[in-house]
Image (spheres, rainbow, N blue to C red):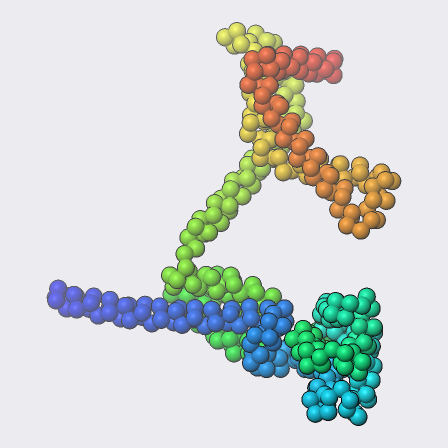
Length: 434
């Protein structure tokens, strides 16, 4: 039998090994959290690069030089040629002035290129037609001419450059027009029919690292929990599967946020509490529906077997009148109260769905609504109307019935209704039995 000192030493050694193991896993968790955060940053940058490219081009051109090849972006030949022609005109003006011999030919070439740019719209492929509209509007305003083509033809003319200080006109073009033209680009399509995008080459090493981490973690969990297969642990960490989707990379924010929570860098306890509450309420709602369905089934069986009829046909002195209280009528009143206060609020979504469907079908049968649906933006009109009518109808009906039950006169009316109901039902059952 080991002595107490030996036992304490073994316990201390076990604690030290466990502490080293936990520290190793904590370090791994933090490292993978940093890697995941870096990957999410790259994913967000890649998603937003095209919408923000004009900003990068004007403020941080080094980024566009580095990242344009990754997105498959190339200079658009037509717009690049246009800017080169402007450079040649500017160079000729600087050397020889507006009277230079080559200037006429260069300006004529620019006028032709301006007309082609407006008519052919080289900005369409990059989905930058709005940029072309900005160019046209700025030229119209600068030249005080309603025609964009006429404005450019007049702008690139010797007479205009002679009458106005050509340095100021070139300065205006370089400040207001050149950046817009320079922002245009060409982006080829791949065999999949989508734009070429080489971000997968950057993302692939992260996917490999996440895959190894996923396999190691799930295998370790399966070894530590007897009776749990590796396949089960793979499903336990289902959220890590978002790392391996080649599309919808933005969904990686879910496993990344969970990793940051696990290492203590953010706190998702409140969100977790809300999710648990939602699941608990959903489970309670489902259980209520199951109980209601079973109760209805039992009632149907009782009616089919004649139990209810026998009960109702019994003499009032034997079964109904107890302590001078009509128990059957009281039972009906209590059932009505339970239905209104407890059951209907839980079934309100289902009731609304039934009413909404009926209203939508009724509206769709009207010729006027079929014509309205053909108008742009009016496709969902019947559903919208049905939604509003259904909500108001159910809310008004429930609140009205609740107020009636809270009033003494209303309770008397319901008790009278229960009495008449039982009398009528008993009479009909007697007629069927005779």
